[in-house]
Image 1 (cartoon, one colour):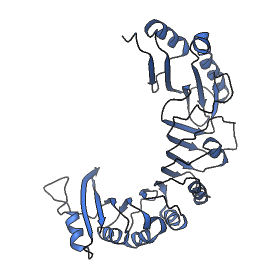
Image 2 (cartoon, helix red, strand yellow):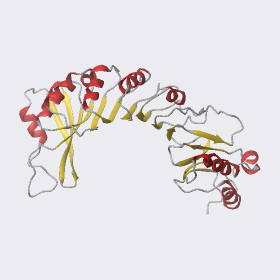
Image 3 (spheres, one colour):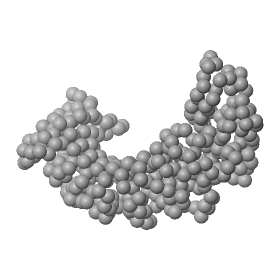
Image 4 (tube, rainbow, N blue to C red):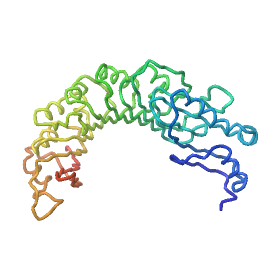
Length: 337
């Protein structure tokens, strides 16, 4: 129904159409198509030794003259023994997000072994690594990453895939192995001069405190510690240590779980640069007539208990219900005058 279409960018999810079928569709229904970018993911059912054979079959359907000569449309297939799926897409890659699994093998219909501009559109990278001695050569490189989701361990192979972090502004990091994770984190931060936001997932509280006091990165202004591996919630003593840490002192936005309302006082009073506080706590008396509202106003309680009159607090708030538990999330906007 779109015979005049000239430009098509398509994410088909897990729906696979091979090159032969695409060729028939385009010739019959999209005769004026000039630009065609797409990606799809295909589940692997073959054994390890049959994976590369399947890849060759897939790519051969995109090696006809229609693809390589008439349109010069090229495709690449990535696969990992740990992944359980093929990742098939046109190159240059035209989407702003990419999921990379280590180790990854690649084959393409591109006539050269490497196209340096293939992944320049990628701004968000999800990098997954597993312990492995297998280091297949990779020509995939991401040079414009702004948002990185990564699971440590980070090895030298990572820096061949991501040779520069000069544009990185947000980091979402979880643990695969505790060994050397803080050292790897320090090396990563040293390469990211513009990094402003860190979210730590599945880290024990002791390692987070080592991070707070052991790392220096003046550009970081947002911290998210809401997903601690052992389910620990910050108490007053821990909140005080957080507020006096290197990263805590420069923090402007904080996401954290605490075990009592009094922790709010420590954070709001001591973190002089704090502007936004997204806090989750359970120490709330619930209104028996309401399933979603506490009995009191958190902002009013804070203003009443704050000794300093130079702090102004407003809020946007919501309640998150989880099973039989009711967790109260409050978003505080803080102004120090």
